[in-house]
Length: 382
Image 1 (tube, rainbow, N blue to C red):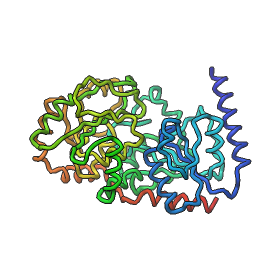
Image 2: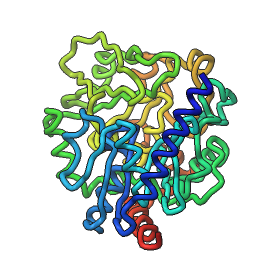
Image 3: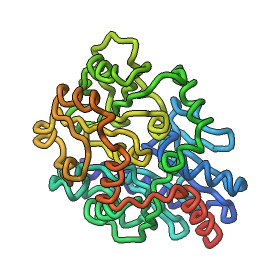
Image 4: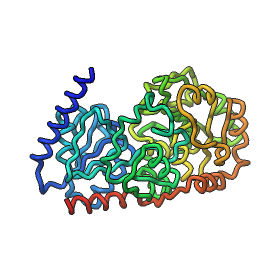
């Protein structure tokens, strides 16, 4: 088995090396990949900003067929088929990824390739990589960070996780998560918010709850932890119409639902979580970093830790105590109902500011352009 793995690794590296040697030397090309085939997250925000300020740059994306419809016309796409994907990556001057690739894959990086790692969980409360204390389960030794040239972070907390969790020793740019620029400046995105609502069939007068749990290593598909009917009824005192959007993690096979209410919509297939956060009024999650992102809107965030003991024993440990950081935490449905029923008694802006101070959050609201201009600088010097 080990021999066959090494052979595949050698073949991939050799192929990329040959593609690298025969690359067009003067071509300004940037290779983007998000979650191994989506058009989403930090890479999407950077890609769109880059095209806006430098439309002459050739933008190439790794895209699975089901996400092709969301890609702008100016983007060149390649499917996640090794021969085509490796060729496109090797020939690009700059790589922008939000996941780490692994040693056994045999990726070759030439001296003219500049690798930017945007990650995807700057302020997640769960441990990652070497912080988990279980390298065998999480394959931490297989992650390649030594070849990364620039890591993107949005907080002092995120920097510590990169240094300790991924053992990254290189340059870190702390200016914010590019995907969060629209959350920092959400008042400028009213037209986009309307378009997102229309694409989901949600009217302007309907308030949105987003339930977005993180994945479970032990369970690729999960049960919905919250009672959606009770959750919505708890908001009756606030008046108006409510709908609960449910989104599974990209690594999950979905969330098993047992609901009959029309006030529920599964948005797991929607391509970009950042869009969903933009239109959300209340976020309910568990251990996901999206909680730290959504705080930028100063709107209510509630963590539901209904399965905390099981999660800690079978999944991950937590790097912080969420309640001490300032989060609203519900340990069961009754506590969740109580928080929602009394939502107006909390100062959510004060809560958000306290948690941001805890993290050492540094979201400039202009991170996409900062990274895009760094890309242009690297292209011109390579």
